[in-house]
Amino acid sequence: MKKTIKTAILTLLLLTLTVSTAFLAYLHFFASDGNDLSGEWTAEIDLTKQAAVSAYSWLQDIEGVSLSLEETEAYIPELTVRVDRSFAQNFESSVTFYCSVSPESYEACLQTAYGALRTAFHDLLAERLHMAGYTGSTDEEALEALVVETFGMSTEEYLAASVPGLLPLFDTLQARFDGGGTYEITEGVLTRRFEEEGTVVTRTETCIRQDCQLILLEETGADSSVVSSDEYPVVYTLRQSAK
Image (tube, rainbow, N blue to C red; front, side, top):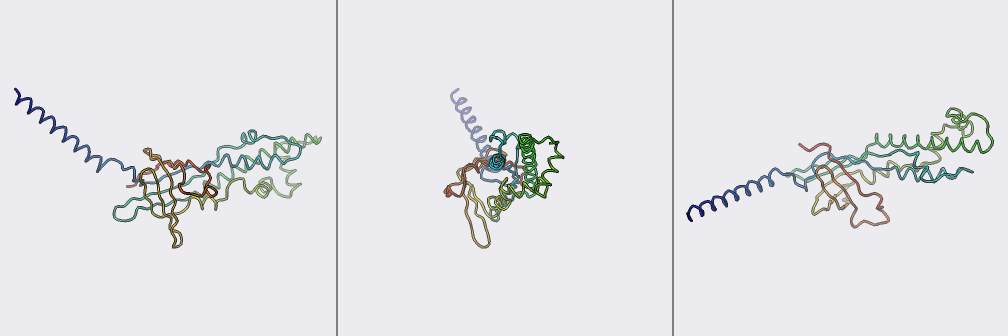
């Protein structure tokens, strides 16, 4: 009886050991590695707040018209610019990345932003004209004709010249996001080394990997006067796993 129990216990231990070994082998060879970011990732950088503040700063200077930031924000739709980032992990060479801002996405965002500002400007212009005793039409076509007559250009051209900082310049976004080089991720820290014209610039950010999302929380060791906390977090979503 004792021998039977002993045999059963040994068999159970052996079976448990076998299952544990198989599971560890699976984790080692097949389970996803949190340090392996291989694939194509995309982030949507939200510029809505900046556009609203820039628009408000300019619109509130229209004489005799009262406007709040909240009222300005109501004119501004969601404005996002796409940033694409690829990671490649090859055990035979360096672990590399490349990142770029989508020019098409930026241009579409810029047009939408100035279209929203145009609507706000026309509404306030109509209000100002009524306050001044103007009795003519203030529909869209009439307002546009007044702008062209007054400034010698369309509303879009006038706004582009008057409010050039409605969104950050494309070059500014490129300076922040564009580039390529090598990377490593260790204990929640993503370190990227940009290779630019023979020099290497290192950028280190705390991050969290959650399945198909990579969340960059803040840049570590950065000069606070250079990197604003408003730039984080940035959430990248995995679009296509590397093959």
